[in-house]
Every structure is written in C-alpha cells, then in structure tokens.
Length: 198
Image 1: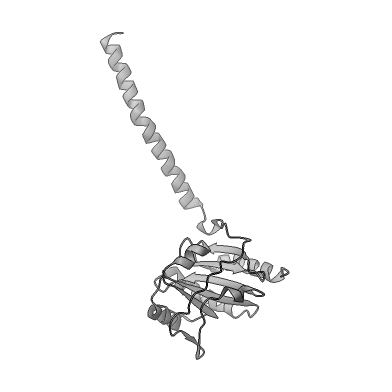
Image 2: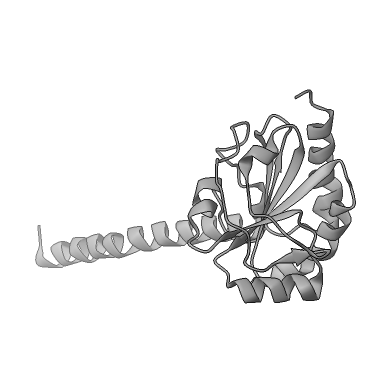
C-alpha cells in the first residue's frame, strides 16, 4: 500500500471515530427533546397504583388552625373507609399557589377527604401560605425531612394522589391540578374511587 493510500485510510478512520460519537450524542439529544416537548410529565406511571397507601404518620404543621381548631397531622388509619385526596405541596412551590382555588373547590365535596403533605417547609411559611391562599385540608402532615415523600414516590411538588376506601392508591397526578386535568382525569378518578366497593 502506498503512503498516500495509507494516509487516506487513516483520515477515513479518524473521521469515523469522530463522527460515530457525535451521531450518537445527537440522537440522544433528539430523543430527550422529543420526550421533553411531546411527553406529558403528569402521565409518569407510579409503582404504587393499586398498592396500599404508605403507613406514613406525620405530625401536624405546628400551630396550624382551621375554623379555630388545630389541624391534625397525617394518620394513615383515616384512609380506610373514605376516599381521600392526598396533595403534596410547599409554600415555596409556585404551581402549588395556582392549584389552591381548585383544591378549595374539591374540599367542598364532602364525599372526599382532602389532606396535605407539607414538603420540606417551615411551619411559619406553611401557615402564612394557607392563611393567604386558603386552607382546603382537613389534615396536614409536616414532612420536613422529605422521608414521607420518598415513601409516597413523589417526583416533585405538587403531586396529588387519590386513595380509595380500601386505603389503596388509585391514581397519581404529577404536577399541579389544572382546570383541564381536574375535568379530564382527577374528577373521573375520584368518581371511580367513590363508586368502587370498599
């Protein structure tokens, strides 16, 4: 093989060595962008659907009152026999503010018990948040360490779970409740849980 032919072969190999990783990188970026823009993060499946709700006891948010009475913490024993909406929220979470009016509306449905898990928040901030935006919760557990959120499989706040009368998780919504998903998925899942035999 001549020197010129050998040089051309080496140049061709170097191009392949450079192009293959570049093509793989671009393919990976394209897949991630498609998932980001076309995917719906609220449709992330939960391994807990159909399983018993975690037995997570949480203390109440300190000094939190509703209608002049202390708001209790989270007690999983209260899930049995009632359809419960569990909402994971924090005062520092901007989308949590946007969903409060919808949660207040849901709290008016006396067939459903609405409870909150206050995620990695200061008690004073949580009280101010609920004082300003309204308190839809019959109970609010303080999850200052984030341990309960891990047990519930939380990806980030806000998230909402429908727990059936059998104390099993029936549905999970990742992200805030919006008018659209309230109508298309959250309400139908609540009605489905209400219709199910305990």
